[in-house]
Length: 212
Image (cartoon, rainbow, N blue to C red):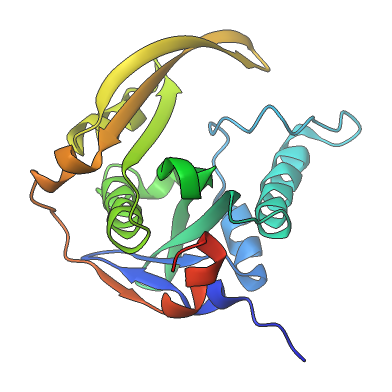
């Protein structure tokens, strides 16, 4: 019996971008545009023996593989490639921890430098939020960014998130302040979406989220 990974057939289409879970064939293209200013997950320690740029690429690939390999109903992360006219422009990640109980999702993303300032980041976030609230029946979305990352914070606030708290965050460059934000389902439904959204290939993914 061959086990099919159902996310290979999942797509979320908006006005200007398409999201689909990252496949192995996509990885080299995403590595080629991976920006040097994206904060990597501090839970993944660096390998000092590798050149810094190579190590960053290794951490990106390893995090994608880890998200697939460690998937469970209670703790999952889905990395979507963001595509514009067949060209990859970044990654939008959607995460759920204790999801069946909390119905809360978190997001993280990056857009390659040549494609910034064109609204792709806002559209990608709006697409995964629609997927989370409508298909996954989430009740709340959270996110965070360092207080100096006004671009990321601006996207969140534009989409209706509200600031909650600021906490210290350890990075390779020291401790920085991390701004947390939240978006409740009820608050989102009062805001008219900017992008028409079409989801295909979701039915076979339902069991992976513990939905019935």
